[in-house]
Amino acid sequence: MAEKAQTSSPRLIADFAMIGDCQTAALVHRDATIEWLCWPRFDSEACFASLLGAPENGQWKIAAIDPDVQLSRRYREETLILETRVVTPEGSATLLDFMPPRAQASDVIRIVIGEQGTVRLKSDLRLRFDYGRLKPRWDRETVCCAAAEVGPHAVCLDAEVPLDCAEDGACGCEFSVAAGQSVAFVLTYFVSYGARPRKVDPKAALQETEQFWADWVARCTYDGPAREAVVRSLITMKALVFQPSGGIAAAPTSSLPERAGGERNWDYRYCWLRDATFTLLAFLHCGYEQEAASWRDWLVRAAGGEPAHLQPLYGMGGEARLPEWEADWLCGFGGAKPVRFGNLAYVQQQLDVPGEVVDALYQARLHGLPQSQPAWQVQVAMVEHLEKIWQQPDRGIWESRDLPQRFTQSQAMLWAAFDRAISTAERENLDAPLDRWRAVRDQLHREICEQGWNAELNSFVRYFGSDELDASVLLLPQIGFLPATDPRIAGTVAAIGQRLKKDGFIMRYDSEASKDGLPPGEGTFLACSLWYADVLAMMGRYDQAHEMFDRVLSIRNDLGLLAEGYDPATGTLTGNFPQALSHLTLVNTALNLTRSDGPAKRRGNAHVR
Image (tube, rainbow, N blue to C red):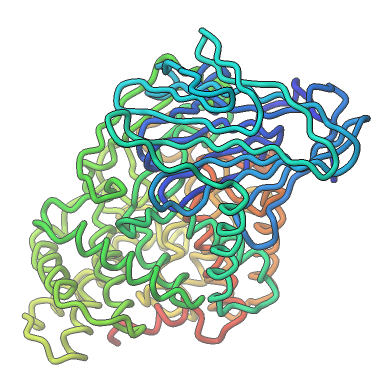
């Protein structure tokens, strides 16, 4: 539905679309302004940062000059090509925004196609590198071509209309497009001390990009009732894969708040190892073995050093140091400060992470990916290290900034690490200290059932000895720690449904009551809501599982994208966007609801009894 362009509307995370080239991504507002882009990688510094600041922090706006304009948008079929329709009293046109899958260089291409009458438009490009801080110097090389550079960064802008470069660091133009005409802009990034990339034919690039996505989607084996949502989620996940390494960005953004105006603002432009098994299963169950194998290989490389130094997250290429800092010159999305880049969680001890890695490598072998001897060596080294530290407290799946605890979900993933390593050694007759590993596995199971269980609440709890609930324990039946039919799982599901459900969605935990080292207050967490649906399906409560799944589908934005969370009180998406974990859990839940051997059941049934 077309809507009138407004400048006074509140800023909403759901107002954005993503385009990308499988190495970085841009966010485009519904008014056709590109407000976020990190070049040349997801985790590079931003050159468009008005998403977290103001227009002077960098953006590229193409807009009708006539203020009486109506806009509507959609993705072109099953692609990542964004179409924004512009209707004015004088005519109509469509703006195509896309980034071709990267070859020699990274390009943002914008093509305006006239449909009816004549539309007058203005392009206003303001590049600001170093997260909106540095203005480049523009030089107009020809009437329709300009180049800019600052430090190591350089861009060239090729247009099909004359350009005007101003002293304030802007490069723009006014132009008209009539029915049957088109005007294209190509913005290309390169290093300032390197050779200029070849010029791009925008129309040929459009055809190639459309064909790339059509070919990729054609490999999808899912054909269930939620196909539209699943395919859009898979496209989103593919776009977040850093193609050179196989690593997957948790999101292309940083510091989009978990609560309007709040302080829970984190940089998610990195690869989290705990997403490993969910990612593998989503890709494998939908026919994307190549992506699953690339992710598996990235995991092996990232974890292949000394297990004692395993981190929860890494840079897109596997970089280890991700120091956290604050950009005080940015006002934050909707005023939410601080604006953070880097992520201090990289130095935390999170004991669920090695369990996720071992389980992911086990699942890869179980699902028929080509065997990898380094993968087994990594598993052995990890489990041998875990034998020494498994009783230590950690920061948990939610990366608490309060005192470490023995978080129940972390302990369960430690159990899974030993369980999967034992199973692999037994299945393939590999040399391993099985008696020692079985003893630790069994002791872990006893301690979790005794100390992670609260009889008064009739539920597994947040950490040993706690009286707080945590939705992460919904994963216990999915990893096979206990069957979904166990009364303790039923009690846990009931308790979480009663105390962590907020207006139909599930919170991670009660941030008002639980200490996590941060000010309280956040929305519900979409992955937890989908895990809740998964457990209901495993229990045979399909009507309730479908109800929760449909509820999550209903709060996607108009393009089918999800953020990390949702605030039912305001009806708004919260947190970084689009969020890989939300989309891959959506895919897995859709599979769990339509296949008797969905990811949750296959993962839960794969352990040693």
